[in-house]
Length: 188
Picture 1 (cartoon, rainbow, N blue to C red):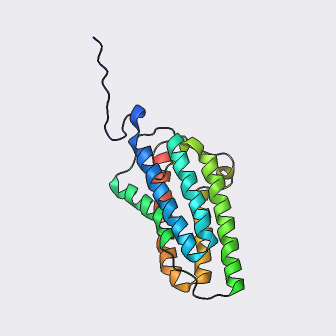
Picture 2: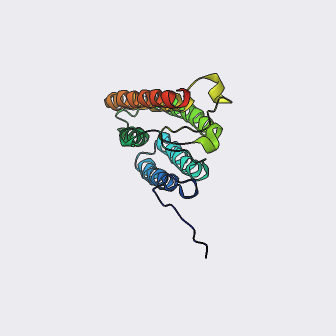
Picture 3: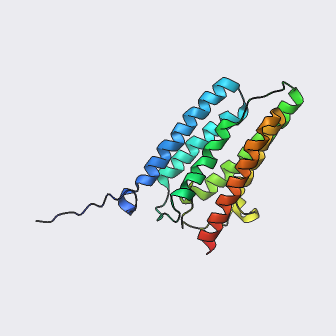
């Protein structure tokens, strides 16, 4: 009698990558929360964040397996930086000009993020892992376009509420940390 040995060790087996399922569920939760924030604030940023979160959930589900290359600290920082935009403060000023600037930065930044996410395709992940190094499309133009897009999009929050500068600077520091970690793993 033949017995199959199924390994269910929390995503460390190619046939049962639970990390992609848990990541997809978490991104869907971020998407629902983003939808709620958009409903509360009517800011285009949150509507685009809904799209980004559900797109990320999809790419989690179809991604190529990769053995985790970082520990719990790095993973926590990655998911914190993914969730941090949900905590920006609403508009303090109802200036149409400042709202327009914010929306334009947001739209341009998210355009870069979506192009980068699509370009990554099956290599997408929130935490750093040794996956296929993508050097085509927008990744050919400059390194870490997704983080650059997030920074541009989030910059718009400073125009609508200057109290957001602390969150923005913290967010940039997390993106820089993530970029540095990814560089070490992918090029090292």
